[in-house]
Image (cartoon, rainbow, N blue to C red; front, side, top):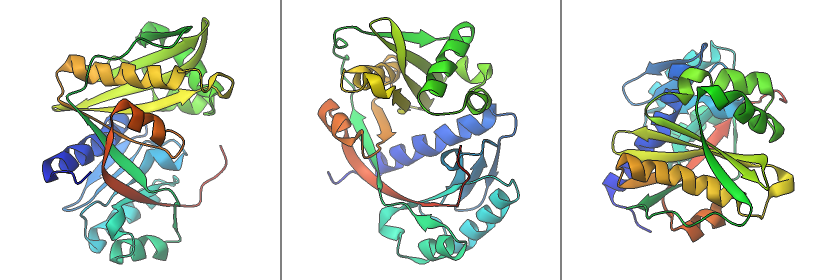
Length: 257
Protein backbone atom coordinates (compact mmCIF):
# COMPACT_ATOMS: atom_id res chain seq x y z
CA UNK A 1 0.00 0.00 0.00
CA UNK A 2 1.27 3.43 -0.95
CA UNK A 3 -0.65 5.54 1.51
CA UNK A 4 -1.75 9.08 0.83
CA UNK A 5 0.08 11.68 2.92
CA UNK A 6 -3.05 12.47 4.88
CA UNK A 7 -3.43 8.80 5.84
CA UNK A 8 0.17 8.64 7.06
CA UNK A 9 -0.33 11.89 8.96
CA UNK A 10 -3.44 10.47 10.62
CA UNK A 11 -1.59 7.30 11.67
CA UNK A 12 1.23 9.41 13.12
CA UNK A 13 -1.20 11.74 14.87
CA UNK A 14 -2.99 8.94 16.69
CA UNK A 15 0.16 7.04 17.65
CA UNK A 16 1.71 10.13 19.21
CA UNK A 17 -1.68 11.09 20.65
CA UNK A 18 -1.87 7.80 22.52
CA UNK A 19 1.37 8.62 24.31
CA UNK A 20 0.18 12.11 25.12
CA UNK A 21 -2.94 10.57 26.62
CA UNK A 22 -0.96 8.21 28.82
CA UNK A 23 1.33 11.01 29.95
CA UNK A 24 -1.67 13.19 30.78
CA UNK A 25 -3.10 10.57 33.13
CA UNK A 26 0.07 9.21 34.74
CA UNK A 27 1.02 10.85 38.04
CA UNK A 28 4.66 11.09 36.93
CA UNK A 29 3.87 11.78 33.28
CA UNK A 30 4.92 14.73 31.20
CA UNK A 31 5.34 15.99 27.63
CA UNK A 32 7.89 18.37 26.15
CA UNK A 33 7.14 19.98 22.80
CA UNK A 34 10.03 20.93 20.53
CA UNK A 35 9.76 22.47 17.10
CA UNK A 36 10.04 19.16 15.22
CA UNK A 37 10.03 16.50 17.97
CA UNK A 38 7.94 15.56 20.99
CA UNK A 39 9.29 13.93 24.14
CA UNK A 40 6.97 12.14 26.54
CA UNK A 41 7.30 10.17 29.75
CA UNK A 42 4.83 8.12 31.74
CA UNK A 43 7.23 7.67 34.63
CA UNK A 44 6.76 3.90 34.39
CA UNK A 45 10.10 2.09 33.95
CA UNK A 46 9.21 0.34 30.68
CA UNK A 47 10.80 1.73 27.53
CA UNK A 48 7.66 1.40 25.41
CA UNK A 49 5.90 4.05 27.51
CA UNK A 50 8.56 6.77 27.43
CA UNK A 51 10.21 8.23 24.38
CA UNK A 52 10.93 10.70 21.66
CA UNK A 53 8.65 11.01 18.65
CA UNK A 54 11.22 11.85 15.98
CA UNK A 55 9.21 11.20 12.80
CA UNK A 56 10.13 14.10 10.48
CA UNK A 57 12.34 15.65 13.16
CA UNK A 58 15.74 17.33 13.08
CA UNK A 59 18.74 15.78 14.78
CA UNK A 60 19.08 18.89 16.95
CA UNK A 61 15.56 18.56 18.34
CA UNK A 62 15.96 14.82 18.90
CA UNK A 63 19.11 15.52 20.91
CA UNK A 64 17.24 18.04 23.07
CA UNK A 65 14.32 15.65 23.52
CA UNK A 66 16.62 12.85 24.66
CA UNK A 67 18.29 15.20 27.16
CA UNK A 68 14.87 15.89 28.67
CA UNK A 69 13.90 12.22 28.83
CA UNK A 70 17.23 11.19 30.37
CA UNK A 71 16.56 13.70 33.14
CA UNK A 72 13.54 11.59 34.16
CA UNK A 73 15.68 8.47 34.63
CA UNK A 74 13.41 6.10 32.70
CA UNK A 75 14.12 3.66 29.85
CA UNK A 76 12.81 4.97 26.54
CA UNK A 77 12.44 4.57 22.78
CA UNK A 78 13.18 6.93 19.92
CA UNK A 79 10.68 6.58 17.08
CA UNK A 80 11.72 7.43 13.50
CA UNK A 81 10.24 6.68 10.11
CA UNK A 82 12.05 3.56 8.90
CA UNK A 83 13.46 5.30 5.85
CA UNK A 84 15.29 7.66 8.22
CA UNK A 85 16.87 4.95 10.40
CA UNK A 86 20.18 5.24 8.57
CA UNK A 87 20.17 9.04 8.57
CA UNK A 88 21.48 11.48 11.15
CA UNK A 89 18.42 10.74 13.28
CA UNK A 90 19.61 7.16 13.67
CA UNK A 91 23.13 8.40 14.29
CA UNK A 92 21.90 10.55 17.17
CA UNK A 93 20.18 7.55 18.75
CA UNK A 94 23.17 5.27 18.29
CA UNK A 95 25.45 7.96 19.65
CA UNK A 96 23.39 7.85 22.85
CA UNK A 97 23.98 4.12 23.21
CA UNK A 98 20.55 3.09 21.94
CA UNK A 99 20.18 -0.04 19.84
CA UNK A 100 17.96 -0.45 16.81
CA UNK A 101 15.06 -2.85 17.34
CA UNK A 102 14.89 -5.57 14.65
CA UNK A 103 11.13 -5.32 13.95
CA UNK A 104 10.07 -2.18 12.09
CA UNK A 105 6.60 -1.53 13.51
CA UNK A 106 3.96 -1.22 10.78
CA UNK A 107 1.65 1.74 11.26
CA UNK A 108 -1.50 0.09 9.93
CA UNK A 109 -4.82 1.67 8.97
CA UNK A 110 -8.37 0.49 8.45
CA UNK A 111 -10.55 2.92 6.53
CA UNK A 112 -14.32 3.03 7.06
CA UNK A 113 -14.28 0.31 9.74
CA UNK A 114 -17.05 -2.25 9.25
CA UNK A 115 -19.32 -3.71 11.88
CA UNK A 116 -17.26 -6.31 13.74
CA UNK A 117 -17.88 -10.03 13.27
CA UNK A 118 -19.25 -12.10 16.14
CA UNK A 119 -16.56 -13.30 18.57
CA UNK A 120 -15.35 -16.89 18.41
CA UNK A 121 -17.14 -19.51 20.45
CA UNK A 122 -16.66 -19.02 24.18
CA UNK A 123 -15.24 -15.48 23.81
CA UNK A 124 -17.01 -12.54 25.42
CA UNK A 125 -16.10 -8.84 25.43
CA UNK A 126 -16.92 -6.35 28.18
CA UNK A 127 -16.23 -2.62 28.27
CA UNK A 128 -14.50 -1.57 31.47
CA UNK A 129 -15.34 1.36 33.72
CA UNK A 130 -13.65 2.65 36.87
CA UNK A 131 -15.60 0.20 39.04
CA UNK A 132 -14.30 -2.81 37.07
CA UNK A 133 -10.77 -1.49 36.58
CA UNK A 134 -9.01 -3.63 39.18
CA UNK A 135 -10.02 -6.97 37.61
CA UNK A 136 -8.91 -5.60 34.23
CA UNK A 137 -5.55 -4.60 35.69
CA UNK A 138 -5.23 -8.14 37.01
CA UNK A 139 -5.54 -9.42 33.44
CA UNK A 140 -2.77 -7.06 32.35
CA UNK A 141 -0.64 -8.34 35.23
CA UNK A 142 -1.37 -11.97 34.38
CA UNK A 143 -0.35 -11.25 30.79
CA UNK A 144 3.08 -9.95 31.76
CA UNK A 145 3.12 -6.44 33.28
CA UNK A 146 3.73 -6.11 37.03
CA UNK A 147 0.50 -5.05 38.73
CA UNK A 148 2.02 -2.01 40.43
CA UNK A 149 3.21 -0.67 37.08
CA UNK A 150 -0.15 -1.39 35.43
CA UNK A 151 -1.88 0.57 38.19
CA UNK A 152 0.41 3.53 37.58
CA UNK A 153 0.02 3.40 33.81
CA UNK A 154 -3.77 2.99 33.70
CA UNK A 155 -5.32 4.96 36.60
CA UNK A 156 -9.10 5.41 36.99
CA UNK A 157 -8.97 8.80 35.27
CA UNK A 158 -7.69 7.10 32.10
CA UNK A 159 -10.57 4.63 31.98
CA UNK A 160 -13.25 7.33 32.28
CA UNK A 161 -11.62 9.67 29.74
CA UNK A 162 -14.23 10.26 26.98
CA UNK A 163 -11.58 9.63 24.32
CA UNK A 164 -10.68 6.22 25.77
CA UNK A 165 -12.52 2.87 25.74
CA UNK A 166 -11.11 -0.11 27.63
CA UNK A 167 -12.15 -3.73 27.03
CA UNK A 168 -11.71 -7.09 28.73
CA UNK A 169 -12.03 -10.40 26.91
CA UNK A 170 -12.96 -13.69 28.56
CA UNK A 171 -12.73 -17.24 27.26
CA UNK A 172 -15.19 -19.69 28.78
CA UNK A 173 -15.85 -17.07 31.48
CA UNK A 174 -12.14 -16.74 32.41
CA UNK A 175 -10.72 -13.19 31.95
CA UNK A 176 -7.78 -13.59 29.57
CA UNK A 177 -7.47 -10.61 27.22
CA UNK A 178 -7.51 -6.83 26.88
CA UNK A 179 -7.66 -3.99 24.41
CA UNK A 180 -7.89 -0.20 24.44
CA UNK A 181 -9.25 2.33 21.94
CA UNK A 182 -7.89 5.89 22.02
CA UNK A 183 -9.42 8.69 19.96
CA UNK A 184 -7.52 11.69 18.66
CA UNK A 185 -9.83 14.00 16.76
CA UNK A 186 -11.42 11.99 13.96
CA UNK A 187 -8.96 9.09 14.19
CA UNK A 188 -9.10 6.16 16.57
CA UNK A 189 -6.33 3.75 17.52
CA UNK A 190 -6.17 0.17 18.80
CA UNK A 191 -3.79 -0.44 21.71
CA UNK A 192 -2.87 -2.92 24.46
CA UNK A 193 -4.24 -6.01 22.72
CA UNK A 194 -3.06 -8.79 25.02
CA UNK A 195 -4.00 -12.45 25.43
CA UNK A 196 -2.93 -14.93 28.09
CA UNK A 197 -0.58 -17.52 26.55
CA UNK A 198 -2.96 -20.33 27.54
CA UNK A 199 -5.79 -18.71 25.55
CA UNK A 200 -3.99 -17.89 22.32
CA UNK A 201 -5.23 -19.06 18.92
CA UNK A 202 -8.79 -19.16 20.24
CA UNK A 203 -9.96 -15.85 18.77
CA UNK A 204 -9.50 -13.83 21.97
CA UNK A 205 -7.04 -11.27 20.60
CA UNK A 206 -9.02 -10.84 17.39
CA UNK A 207 -12.25 -10.21 19.31
CA UNK A 208 -10.52 -7.75 21.64
CA UNK A 209 -9.03 -5.90 18.69
CA UNK A 210 -12.41 -5.75 16.94
CA UNK A 211 -13.96 -4.30 20.11
CA UNK A 212 -11.42 -1.47 20.01
CA UNK A 213 -12.03 -0.98 16.28
CA UNK A 214 -15.75 -0.80 16.91
CA UNK A 215 -15.26 1.86 19.58
CA UNK A 216 -13.71 4.04 16.87
CA UNK A 217 -16.58 3.20 14.54
CA UNK A 218 -19.13 4.21 17.18
CA UNK A 219 -17.22 7.45 17.79
CA UNK A 220 -17.73 8.20 14.09
CA UNK A 221 -14.05 7.83 13.13
CA UNK A 222 -13.49 7.05 9.46
CA UNK A 223 -9.99 5.75 10.11
CA UNK A 224 -8.67 3.32 12.73
CA UNK A 225 -4.95 2.80 13.17
CA UNK A 226 -2.54 0.61 15.15
CA UNK A 227 1.11 -0.37 15.36
CA UNK A 228 1.48 -4.11 14.87
CA UNK A 229 3.85 -6.43 16.66
CA UNK A 230 5.46 -9.17 14.62
CA UNK A 231 3.18 -11.70 16.34
CA UNK A 232 0.00 -9.78 15.60
CA UNK A 233 0.73 -8.52 12.09
CA UNK A 234 -0.90 -11.33 10.10
CA UNK A 235 -4.06 -11.16 12.23
CA UNK A 236 -4.46 -7.45 11.51
CA UNK A 237 -3.98 -8.04 7.78
CA UNK A 238 -6.83 -10.57 7.92
CA UNK A 239 -8.97 -7.91 9.64
CA UNK A 240 -8.39 -5.58 6.67
CA UNK A 241 -5.67 -3.31 8.04
CA UNK A 242 -3.04 -2.08 5.58
CA UNK A 243 0.43 -0.76 6.29
CA UNK A 244 0.70 3.00 5.74
CA UNK A 245 4.11 3.62 7.34
CA UNK A 246 6.81 1.69 9.18
CA UNK A 247 8.50 2.95 12.32
CA UNK A 248 11.98 2.00 13.43
CA UNK A 249 12.56 2.28 17.15
CA UNK A 250 15.83 2.72 19.00
CA UNK A 251 15.79 1.42 22.55
CA UNK A 252 17.75 2.45 25.59
CA UNK A 253 19.09 -0.26 27.88
CA UNK A 254 16.28 -1.02 30.28
CA UNK A 255 15.93 -2.98 33.45
CA UNK A 256 14.04 -6.26 33.55
CA UNK A 257 10.50 -5.81 34.79
